[in-house]
Length: 119
Image (cartoon, rainbow, N blue to C red):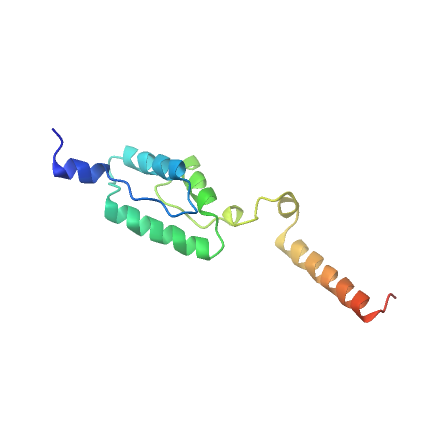
């Protein structure tokens, strides 16, 4: 017979809408495999708050969780390749400087055409 404490240990918070339920359940199970660190309801809440902060800073929570499990981390870290849109083909091939330069050139071209000066 399971005690109330056992039930609390097995509880999983509902993930936010932007996070697939299966991925969240996999991450919680993964975290609980590590016996030295408990992943309690309170820990889950704090972790989801951290994930939300990172999401608001432009990081993709799904990629962050996948990266954490792949790297065998117990938490998530800000990784540039986990930003929204970071894994698009054009972004993989260009550095940040190249992307900024390309955008500036495109804006300059648009401005020239808008003024009717084609030289």
